[in-house]
Amino acid sequence: MKLHLINIETAAEQQELLFDHSRARAEIFAGWPDVNYCGGCEADVFDQIFFKPTWASVVHEGRTIAVGRMIPADGPFTMVEEVWPHGIETPLPDKSRSVELHRIGKCEDLPPQIATLAVLKIQFGFMQAMQACGRPHMFFLTPKRVAETTLIGATRHGPAIQVDGAPFFVVSATLEEDALTFMAETIAEMEQSVIGAKSAVLTDEVGI
Image 1 (tube, rainbow, N blue to C red):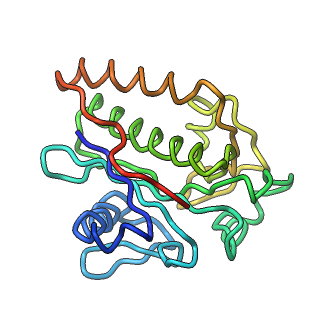
Image 2: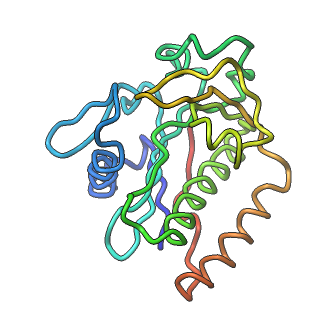
């Protein structure tokens, strides 16, 4: 199981990976509102180069099984502010030191442990990228069930809003100093247990 991070500087060299990333998004987010589908792929305005996106893909046994996207928060605009402003009542973190995360998801037909490991790798890749570019804060839209379980320490910036009939929150969090070490150890142990091997959790240099 391998994590790939692609940015606007490496996209030309990794076109096949990026194409597979877009096709996986069409599968993972099929039926969601406000997404764009064409030719079996999914993309939106935040995939444009002027947002300086970093795309993350986890490939397992030749298939892209988990994806995510990150943009610097001080670009032209952010998704949460433009699409869900009614979910923001308190200030977001300093945008010059923040990133916004989008489109984090995994294929629905995966065994539970494989799915968990794949999403952890996506998160770890973004955490390394955040550390590398000196942006310790992140914000994003997340389902209420996630905000109340795995994101207990995150800051909610407003009331629950309805997305496709389900409640979501705009939340933010800060990268803790020892978070990368803890996550790397967790991934290594889980990967050894689940698939009996350890692979690099990050393969590419990332700049945003």
